[in-house]
Length: 110
Image (cartoon, rainbow, N blue to C red; front, side, top):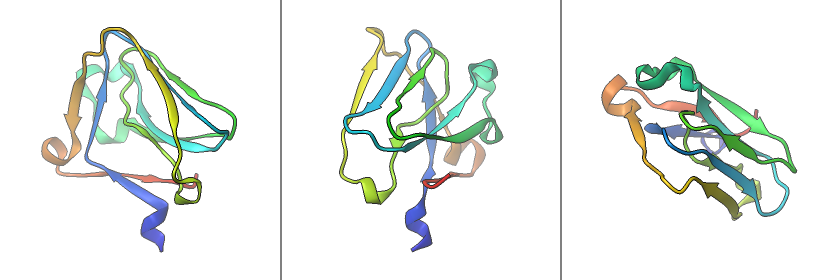
């Protein structure tokens, strides 16, 4: 089923005061959708881009980086990620659905 090869995101956020990292407990590839901190609160859907993180790697997100969670293809489910974040975990959010009347489509096989 083609719909199982993508997800739809209705919101994204960033943490202004702290970084965040994600590492799979076992080496598997995964997908993240991120936007540069240079856009600040003026983020738009076209500023977001999906990236495939290769098997055996994790991702470190600097403070201010727009993001969502991490996503895996169903062939790797269920799985667990180790995540770390700064002591202060403030969050600024953007709802693509309500603010832009759209959803972000993210392929799980890049």
